[in-house]
Structure formats: C-alpha cells, structure tokens
Length: 306
Length: 306
Image 1 (cartoon, each protein chain N blue to C red):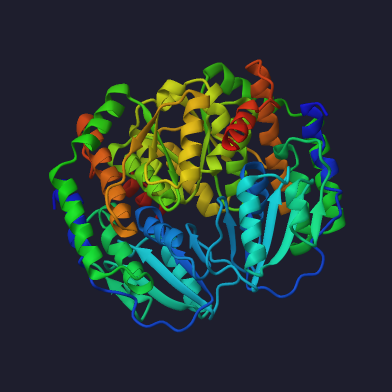
Image 2 (tube, rainbow over the protein chains, first blue to last red):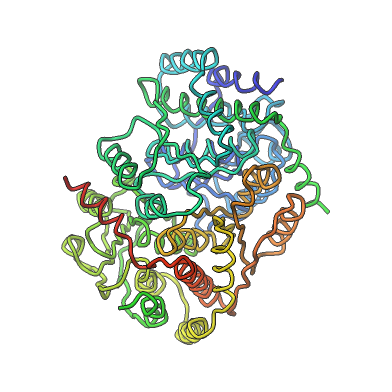
C-alpha cells in the first residue's frame, strides 16, 4: 500500500472490532511495546485511570509483575526483541496475557491474541493497535466511532493547514518541539516520532504544566532558539491555556497553536493524531524524502543479530 | 548559599537520615511532584519495582487513587500549585499520605511529613528529596552511603572532564541531547533539566532501547544535526552497549560517552547525577550566566496568581 494510502487507512482501522475479550480481575496493567507500537499503550495509559498502567519500553518487567497483572504485549511485526523478551517473562511470572500483533513470534506466545492486518508500517497501524484497548476498557459508543471516521475523512480530503505548517518547518529547516498537555501528552510524543520516521528529522516533545518547571527558562535565554519551531495544541483547560499564554508572552516565544476539531475525546484525539500524520508526511514530501523508508532501523536489527 | 556551594552540598544531603516511617500495606504508589522535585520521584520509580509507581506531573490524580494508595507529595518550596492540588485530592480520596517539603502550604496537609532544610534551589536539593525514598524502600547500607559521599567529594575536588564537556558545548553553541538507559533514564532527564535551568539552554533526553525506534532514523538523515551534541552514559548491559555502538556507527553520530564511576548502584547513580550538575554549572559559567537565577519561573508564578 502506498504510504499516503496507509495514512488514509486510519479511518478504516477504527471499524476494527476486536477486543481483548473477557479478562479476570487484575490489580495493575503492564504494557510492553516499543516505538510506534508502544505509543498505543502510552496513549491508552493517559486515558485509562481505573488501575495503575505501566508502559515498559525495555526488555525487563518490574518485579511486581505476576498473577494480578494484566500484561498486554504489542508488536506490529511480532518480532520486536524487547517485546518478545518482556512477554516471555510475563508468561513465566503467571501474568494474564493479551497480545496485539500482525503475526511473527509474538503470535505464538499467548492464548488470546488480537491479530491485526499486516502490510503497513507499524506507525501507520495506530488505529488497529489502539482500538482493542478502547473497545475493551473505554466506553465510546458506535456513533462516536462513526463521527470520528467522518472527521478523519474530512482531514484526508482537506488538510491545507497541516501542509502549510510542514512547509513552514521545511523552509526554515527547523526542529519541531511539540508541547502537549493532558489528555494529549502522548499525542505530542506521537507527533515527535512521526517527524522522526516520516520526515527524518529530529523532533522533541514535552507537556504543560511540567515544562513550566524546566523548558521555560531556556525559552527565554537559550542560544539557537531559531533552530526550533514550537508547537502546542488547543483544547486546553483554562489553567493550562493561561500557562500557554503566559509562557509565550514572558519568554517571547511564538507557539504554533494547532486547533483541535471534534466534539468528543475520541474525535479530538484521532483528529490531532491524524493532523500530525499529515504534517510529518508533507514535510517528507517538501524534503523530497520517502516517508515510508526506514532502512536504518532494518540495518540496526540486522547488526543486532550478529 | 552560593550556587557552587549548593552543588557541593549534595554529599552532605546523603547523610540526611529521615525516612517516611512505618507505612500501612499499599498496592500502588502515586508520587506528585514537578520539575526538580518530581525528578526524585521519577528516579525512585526506576529503581523500585515491588509495586506500581506512577509519577503525576500535573494537577489531577488518576481515579484509582484511594485507601490502597501510598501517596507521596514532593515540593521543595511547599507552594507548587500542581502538587498542592494533587495532595488535597489525595487527602479527600483517603490515600495514605507522606510528604517531603521544606515548608509552605504543603507542610500543613499531612500528618507525617519529612521536613528538609530550606535555602537551596529545589534542583540543588535532590539528595534531600531522594534520600527519604531510598531509606524507606531500598536497602543500601551505611558504608555504601559513606563511599558515595567520598565519591561526590572527589568530583567536587576534580571534575575537569565535566568542565571540558561544558566548554565543548559552549564553544559549539550546541544543544545537548542525552540518551540514557536503565537504570539511568531519569538521570538523563535530570541532565536535561540542569542544562535548562542552570545553563539556560534547551536540552532534550531519551533512552535506549526506545530511541532505536524513533530518534535513530533522523540521526542519519536530519538537517541541523550539527546544532546538537549527543551524550550517552557508560555502565550499559552488553545488549545496550551493542545498541549504542551500532547506532553510532550506522548513523555516523559521535556520542560523548560519560564514564560512570563507582561500584554500587547508589554510587554510580549519584556520581552520574553530580557529573551532570558540573557540566551544566560550567556551561553557565562559560556563557557568563548566573546558574542560580530563574526569574522567569517567578514571573510565571506571579502572573498565574492574577
């Protein structure tokens, strides 16, 4: 599938109906996933707050992992070494296991595995990776999913502002720094990773109000400030909106404010995710770079096997 | 106290003997703290793995917070609005409350509060903020604390390499990007925040192996790469060491490798924290900037009150 078609596939992915099925009671959730797969877990961890959720982006599980733990392993390819190692440890420790993958070794490690379609870049499969969490643990209704699809279709058809932001960044040759806020902290990180892999540029993220305790001083006094383009999102609480406004004013920093379309959390979340997809895509095009190509990662994996 | 004396005070802080005292059984820990105070909680969360630990760097607590939760609120000043809001919510929800502060409103919210000396910048009080966690939940012995003090004294007396790294960064006018790894992921973030507030420059952090799933592609292909200085730490597992070596080689990126002195986790952790203190301090000096001054933060707090 062409990369642009992969991006446009996001709305179809929301129609994916699989969930994790019934689960025994648990006292904590541990999610294992790296990069584009792990982000699904991180976004879920920001939305779900009925028990502690820890996202492990490494090889090993914390010592408390055990029968009271619902372990969810995510790897689009099913062959991510960190996730395979963590999942095997979860099995040994008697965790309740659920997995999301398109195949690979991971699909052989659990009894209840959500199998999702293959053939996409992992970062283009965020819908497939996230929907099982949403359908299992969050109560969005069907009309909300349908309206979200409609909003994503609208963005597919018309995303001039996202393209213009990409062209601004490309013209400047600037490094994006995305300042999110709850419930979009991990969407900011998602934007960072899409700039990294689609546009092949460095990018960074942080979130309000935490960044008021570290990045705010250098926003006023750093060197190389014009190497960066600062981005923040709309749909903030009054308190956070005030923080964004004051931070901008007292440090003399322009924030590109990305308006958030949609009425519900589900709609706004996917709108903002998809908006970032298009900014990173158009920046790749502006740079004459293939947004899909990530051969460095393949080289790294090859070298790690020797 | 002069800022350099504040840095040198770290070894004294390790002699601080307060702990949280006895605690009822709990099933999860929630730590609330922002910026330089929150980092103590984050570093602890990386070391402690006998129950889930969530660090909240925002106003609100997750819904699961309740009587089974050990809530630990940290604010050096005792007047951080996010931490005060979160702590009041923790009290309302019946969490078991422990607090660390030098005073302020926070000191009036809990029955068992660790009061630490005032008069420092919060970021210069990391020893005071971290030791109650270590003495309550980790089993480092007294001779280990003593040897750690000795190692910090050594750094206070001789840190030429840290100064040279600072001067390299200052001469280039480069933006540090610190790539940590377990158990130093949050030490990398601590370095970032020390560059932010002491040196007044932007800085960013990420960690292996997660960064192999996002930053690795741009390390090969980004524009503006020479605006950055990439730093990683020693004392990595064989697998992570291999990742660092391959990432450097296939992306053509020089990493400044910071050697980690010390024999035990406690020694290595504080050595690496303190090494970063000195790099950020000497970079401020190189830039003719007062490392202590953070008046932007005060302005922000003033404006937030109106």
